[in-house]
Image (cartoon, rainbow, N blue to C red; front, side):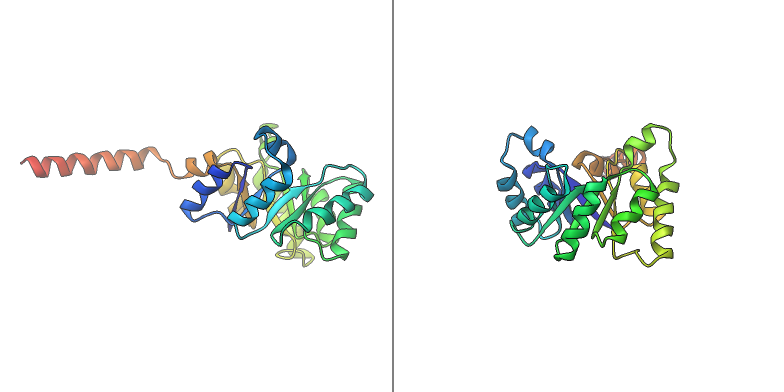
Length: 217
């Protein structure tokens, strides 16, 4: 399994790199805008930091302009992947960009039925959202498992890689891993939460206490 970080914060990317687990970056214009940074400049800096797929999202809603923007984004750096929303116009754009050899990531996917279309049109990535659905009471392990099963049935698995997005908890990471997703993308804080456990802290306290008693006795 690969881990991407969902951020435009360069310090967070550096921290992830220190753990040795950053394989790529997903971001979007709103995240970059919140950071108060220039879209193109930020994405190129990220590409120079992480030697892996970096998703840069189009702003347009119509296929013709999406294609134009996608070609521009892909030209910024060899690591760039064009992020396209899961809409009828988006699928048209994915089809056209794929035919030109441009790598795409179809985002805002909320059903297995939606996930079929990017694979049919040779998108490199599909990004089913997890946190939003689980907050609505849906079973996300089954959701991802269904996508995995469909992809395996029809030879899409591995060709269109499944990026579980909008992850909110370590449990959701585990659910996606068990279901067979290729990639997780989430924020630094969620990854840091996976490193924590009450028994780990308890064990450290026990070891330190035992060591201190050994020294003083």
